[in-house]
Image (cartoon, rainbow, N blue to C red; front, side):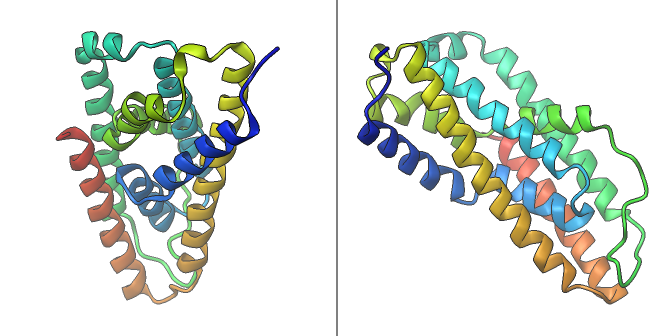
Length: 207
């Protein structure tokens, strides 16, 4: 059993936290979704994004950056599928009925499995995430010396860091959402969230 040093894990955690907390298409999608739909589905959506991080971490650790490029068409398909789903969510937000003071409570059941895979697709197609794991991670750690224990440690740190970041954004967005009570404000939030979600979809699809 070797694993990584405490300093190595701390360096990875710090770099990942900086990358994860920086606003990008993934964070925009989370914020827009929570603003427009509330808490329902947020866990499934962000869980999919977190697992997406593990997929990219695995590719980087196994030295499969070249494979990722080789199967560019597969990742492109995943990227466009995620972008298309975000556009679908954006359209539903734009058309959402207005209610006050509960900010259009969600009555339509959404598939948690679909939301999970939507989050996964968003992460796998997010250029910021790809750059971190496939380009920056090798400069932070010597990935050729990572054994099974070290990979388990990295996986644990990754899930912890991105989980905390996603929970922070969801929590802050929910608090902001509760301040909105008038029908006019609800409509503005729905339309604004729709535009942000569509922008996230475009950002993912065009990079």
